[in-house]
Length: 149
Ligand code: DQA
Image (tube, rainbow, N blue to C red; front, side):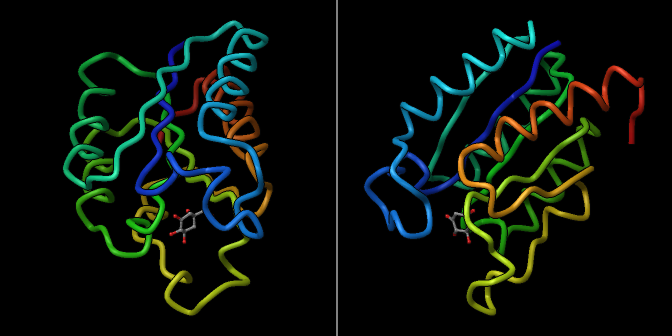
């Protein structure tokens, strides 16, 4: 099983940016956690981060061409603005989980909209970086049941 773990803008600055919202784990630390967890689950995790919307669309399309089974995506601020990312996830029809490190529901009004959510099987918010591992667990279980959206 192969999962694409895609992170959007400013998530490369984890550990530097607003630790009160995003904690102290660095992006490199997060990737290490994801790869360790992938090893425990016996799956492959392909990790990618970009600050650019079109590059994220390209990566979602690459997931399709590469035969990925699932996608975990934290689109960062593009969550609240990007119809292009929604359309990309709809296009590839790969089971996808939206992750937010912070509890977006309890933050500013502009963070209450998620365009991508309509194409996702599940959203995990406010669990810190552990949310990515929970998303991986969810997809492994979901995919092993043979369910596809
Ligand atoms: C975020 C929440 C977004 O509102 C914000 O723009 C981010 C990170 C999160 O992980 O909590 O960049 O997606």
